[in-house]
Amino acid sequence: MKLVYPAVFTPYEKPGDGFVVMFPDLPGCVTGGDTLPEALFMAEDAASGWILTELEEGKDVPSPSPLSSLKCKRNEIINLIPLDMDRYAEKYGSAAVKKTLTIPAFMNTFVTEHAISCSRLLQDAISQKMIGLSQ
Image (cartoon, rainbow, N blue to C red; front, side, top):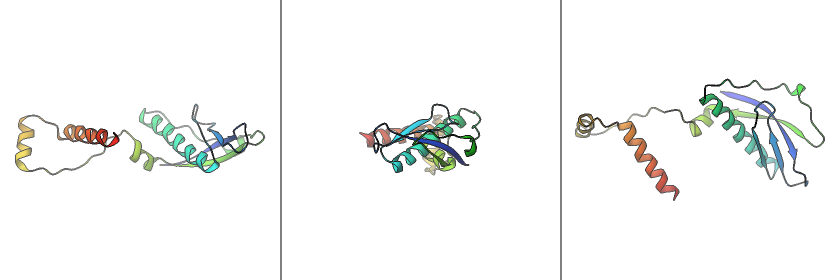
């Protein structure tokens, strides 16, 4: 799903120090950056995270405001921020992804006899590996 939302970029009080970014259509979605490129990147990430959370909670995604309805204050910039929700959800979403695995027949017999969930076992092993790599 591709979405586009307008964002309002407001310069920090001290010129040249960066921007605060807020989304009129995404309540509480605020971010910023020390440079305009960083603020643009952070805006995409913040809005994508906000939208993904709404979708995972089963909520409707708000419609973006038309640019003509938005008013800028002095020094503010309004820019459209494109969101690739499929790509973002694939990377950060909590939805389960089906994977196929191959194990030897004797292991399959063992897990069946002992009611072991291969999915749970694999998730636990990957979680432990992730913890080990982050330390």
